[in-house]
Picture: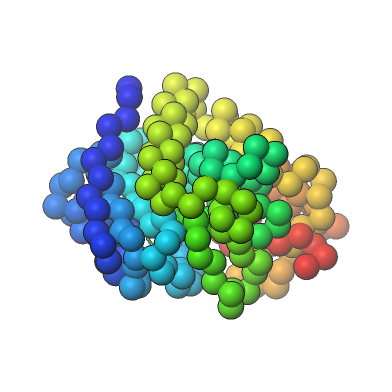
Length: 239
Ligand code: BTN
């Protein structure tokens, strides 16, 4: 099945995810896309705000995959692959995008894009923010942009590429299931065995990256044994 996307463009909006949710409750079809030049209430994961001035990509895609809600998390890994492809397509050839659990996209250790996947009625909303020209200077982590890495300053180019790559990875997911997505994601993430720290709400847990479980949960080897982490984020152990 080839994905068909219909893009609704806004000069300014609160949050493209909120607008996509609203459209979902009105019955908007699979492939509906909300794109805004600027967000006044951009949202990130874990209740963070998302820096959203003009010059970056803010996009939400409404998906009706027909799959159970339990598979929603798989879409965030699949989307991270599409975003990493997009970032690499816009940057100089040798520059690589790296993935950090659950779905951050980094270049040279700095965050260049974020993904926020939410469930709305029978639909999944996949929100994507890519720092093309602007990055926040006051974030709790290192940030960067496409342009700061010598890349192409095209928000519309980023939008077109990310939708194309999302269509590709959705097709692979439909045909081959999560295993293929998971393997591709692991190829672009920390090497298995890397020392990382997981922040999952309580005390941070330090251990060695042991890959992804079959549902996308983070596997962490600790002195107390292997732990499964389903929500939170990770940082290299030394940072
Ligand atoms: C993260 O915390 O890393 C996720 C950030 C997701 C930001 C995007 S921008 C488009 C969409 N609309 C939002 O309000 N958030 C997402």
